[in-house]
Image 1 (cartoon, rainbow, N blue to C red):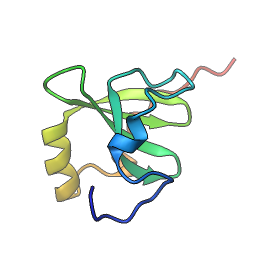
Image 2: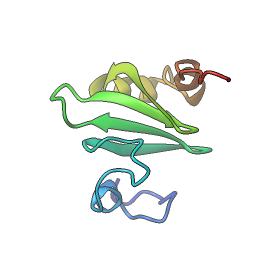
Image 3: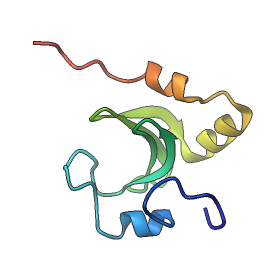
Length: 96
């Protein structure tokens, strides 16, 4: 947000996204990082869908959170979506 305290090496999400999707190929085009929870945990909004579903990215995993941007804004403001609740939904990679 404009006027906020930057947490990364970018000024705003437009600057962060201007070079395209994640170069690792793990984050599809259209998903935009909007919040850094710290410890490489990000919330992303999916602009490919008008409803604005939210996704989470952590440790190379990317998964839908089951809520929209509007719901996410309300829930994070109320404290019902936290880094802990996001990580509870993280898929577990198969250990081979």
